[in-house]
Image: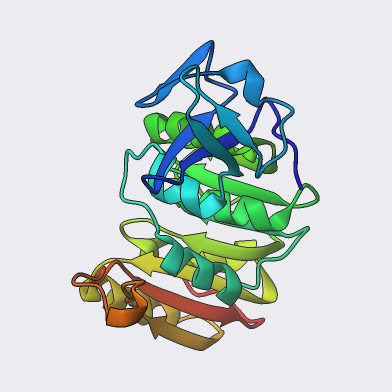
Length: 263
């Protein structure tokens, strides 16, 4: 069982109300106020996950680790639309991202997909993110610091129209408005045999990407859309929830073959 560190983001779980509080210990100071009383922040550090902490009124909370899913869905500070876990998990698998890899992406957005990549590549890998907008960079790096993943990410404040510095990336991912303009840059940055991934929200964009990809030696081209339907967790009335997330994005993947790059 893990021990709470002063840099952790923790979950305080109220079992009576089935309610969670999220607390980043590296930012929190002094006391944390809940509807059941105060908790000394310092008292959390060094405790085992799964143990109980009491407020000054005697109410108890279970201390749990904040998962990457928890953070992305509930604590990530968003300046942009994020890539949701239902898409990001498939993207990471489809791009074959693994420990030690070099992943090149553009743009960083609020850092949700960057965090997933950084989580997977480990300390031996690196995520290089290209982003034009400084406010996005600052916000994304703040989110990554809270997760303890910022040291695995290098951000380049630059327009990818200038090209990527990298030439042997294990995976390249584009989440930009007009990705078809940069297919040639992505091709040059990617290792032969490895995967390019692209995310776009509209069919019009998919069409433009396909037109451009046809001009390059790519195989295994795939277009997909992932839908997620959750179910109510009541054994006596098991049925889908009344609402479900609808369309979020189209995902495009292609594998690089050696060949001559057309402009």
